[in-house]
Image 1 (cartoon, rainbow, N blue to C red):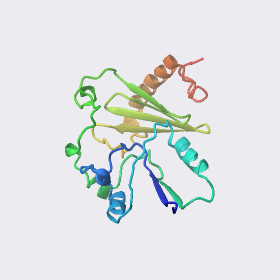
Image 2: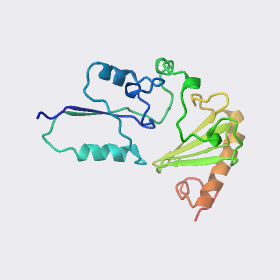
Image 3: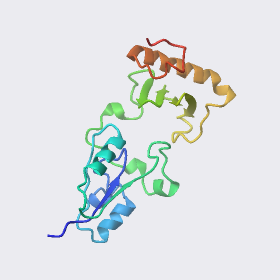
Image 4: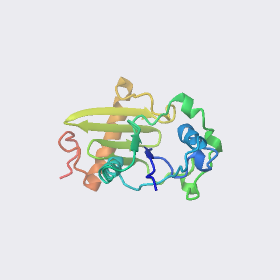
Length: 202
């Protein structure tokens, strides 16, 4: 029996069932749908719960047996920043008509009462974030060099206009950074200690 050829497409932050070729009519995925219509014997979806995409990709590349059938892995570049797809792709989807997953809870809906004043998050050893719902501050630090991004989520929900360098936003940046540092101290995050001396986390 001949070995099959395999085309593996990796998409970060993609719901497992959100592929038009598999029956999700509200979410067309043009290239995959075209492959299915062209007679591909099987288009399937797998879902990985691996925290970091790089680890999942490395596993796939290193565990493939040598000398076996054609295997192509397509991983899109820069899937995290920015998170804004091209306009022609966004136009394919009617956001209000997209069905919600079954585990979507009322607390996730817009307008639900907040459970905290600010939300902080981390990404590896290069990024920290804080948002108060209206404003979002992202702090990057790579090899000792720092970069900031500030977004007005109310007027710029797609995070396309960085306001961190605006003189009128200096006080806001300082306030959000102080909230971020307080959270870091509370949870024992030592990431920013060499660069930011405002809060001791020792």
